[in-house]
Length: 221
Length: 221
DNA sequence: GAATGTGAGTTATAGCTTCTAGCGTAAGCG
DNA sequence: CGCTTACGCTAGAAGCTATAACTCACATTC
Image (tube, rainbow over all chains, first blue to last red; front, side):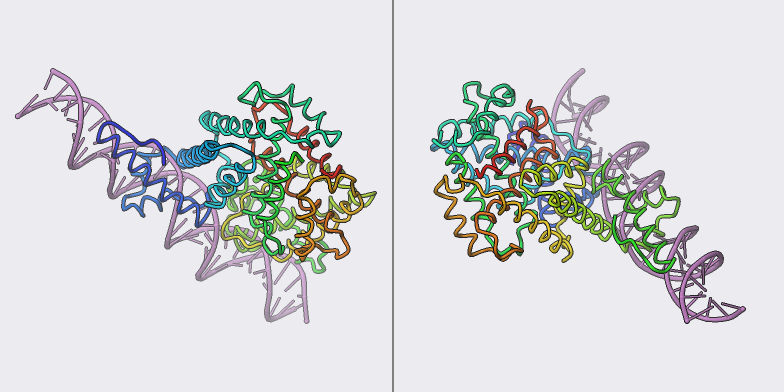
């Protein structure tokens, strides 16, 4: 998953055990959620005693932070891979949904309720910026005619033109900034509610809603 | 907050203590999140010993369930109150945001990452239906000219026309169903990311983004 | 090659948590 | 006024995070 290629045997062993711990952690998260993640239980599963695990992760939060970091990294890689062969928002929307459904708990760990003690490392900010760069390129490349179809769009674009410190590329037009932002918030809105089970029993397929929202984005609405 | 008016003195005392427990629970949730909620700590704060609290809530999950139920109830009441004096989506959007910001953890408790084992009581389904009713009325009352501005909208409307078992009112047009759904998902998308802190340090005001999305909804985009 | 240092794993322990069992008591109910 | 019900208590089991102190194997260095 991450942090491989170590030089010395000890460092390699250490990296290997860390990966194994994280694998067990993902299993626990998938079955009982992040709040029920137990270092003790992981250690027992791996055939070693509880405190031994603290050699590899200083505390619970550090393990969770590593998991979140890996998840971010994986999503960013998926985005980059998709952008490789022609980049457009609809394709990224598919990639995002596939990544989310592949492991709902992983998605919710990254974008769901934050754990109280957790502090996002500078690393994740950089990775987010990476993804935003790909997304912005896709949004800038697919300009739409309906962009100025409503009165409020120009005013928000004007606001973003003056509040774009979060945008990696300085040449992206404000409309691309706006489209990137709403790509994020709208698709997350559908995914988040779907994965949290708020659509169950409502009698419609969330995938259809997601597709409609994704289409609306690519068509500039 | 809830379940008041009891007949016998004992029942009244019991209800009173339950409310007091919930108040302390909300305080804890507001400061440290739901995962850090401790029945023991609440009991101590109330001047009684830990296990005494189990007379009022069988376990932790039952307390949390009661909190979620009350939160749902509160949001539905806020929606109903807003709809009292003229109902339109923009007003409901303001109400939703105000409710969310009033207690971010409360919002995340309802709409954030669910605990895997947790099963929502039938009660919340009914309350959701209540809110949806208000929302649908607001959406139906504010039809917009731009509704058919894009090719995908009619197709999604057609889909919803055949998958509307979740809609409380049978007379609402499919376009109102669609607008109610995206009201929910889009605004939740912004709120969820904002409350989880994903916008911090990005240099723009989430309120502006939220307002833009809310305006886009009322203008049919 | 021997001495030294580093790091993994152990048990013991403190302090926290949820939750059960069993007991006394005080209050409401008939 | 007596009986019952439900409240609150202490004790305790089982689990968790995390620290401390110790052993032992491996790696490095002299």
